[in-house]
Image (spheres, rainbow over the protein chains, first blue to last red):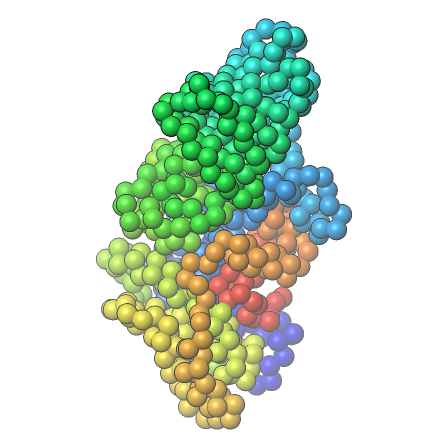
Length: 327
Length: 198
């Protein structure tokens, strides 16, 4: 039989028909608006009819689910402006991200010139606080700060959570961040501060700050340079140097992403749990040591779980408010 | 038509209700261990079979045999298992069609070489996977790609995509189906396997 694959219809093989049907099922199944119990029964029937249905479905469904990662392909650097050189599709998605950011900025508050004000974000929330001089403080999930911005000084108390500071330096009025008994004095800079109840972590992105830990109050300040990460508890202080690119990943939340590169699954879960209403629980410690990479929308716990399942082959059990990951 | 598939002849109804639990584990195994071999497998099939448009079907048939054989017992070493099934399948086909394409025989001898080459990483790192997804998007016709982006990047429902693109839901389904088939080729096979696209 002559076999011109350009002439359609009669040249469609049985295998192709199966693959197409499998694709339709894979798509329909993830279409939450319209998927019903009886659809599920129908799908189960179809899968039981023949192993060729099953293998085709598994093949396409796993690929279709993994394509969820497309949602996460925008790293923070993609955020700036529209790049004409990029194909239309990336511009579309950049716009989607930009819109999301605009949505958050609405919560920003321009401070009056004096007085102390408190700001906080809920779990999964994000906000930007703008000081009178244009300096910005971006608050991550579940974060509380107080700000005093008057003629005499600029002080910010980070009572809880994580904030990214982008400070316009003013030598006569340095900005001081007070967190967990430690003081951070800016010398014109961008830095990230996180307080998690037991320790304070300061990552310097640009410029420099002087870090004054409670444990060394009597000694001189510790100057931090870009890439420096200071971790302080009530009684200890350590400073390590990280590649600035890695620190940039830690700032993924500013564009609504949490970014992992070969992170232990248990660490990734701890991080994702900071944002979502759903909690992820690792039932098997061995699973916690698996490594995961990727960028995930901060509040899409389901996506994270799905990716963990397809990429790591772990078992994922979804019970309304918690997701259990096991071997 | 030559070598359509074993599809039509498969014993139906093999996985009964009672097999549901076992199937879940078998399915996990299949997705985790077998599908990542697709790039190497398709490459082998392409070199072993004259008619390139049948490679996707051949691959599917290999999967069916692998899945069925693994039902009773999972092989310790997956790759040699899959490739011996592929080789047997091709041998069967050649016998059935009573043609012996010379290059096929020659290539069967290359099988051992193929097995020694480093296979695809089991845990494909995210970046490589993103690249494959990107390649798949690039390969899609424009409207198809648009629909897939609205679905996967913007997370719209089919109905919303239909409104946004000004087309029928059914057409959206068509586009997404085409997109999913291409995605599957690139996610598992790292390239487009079937050249047939309507």
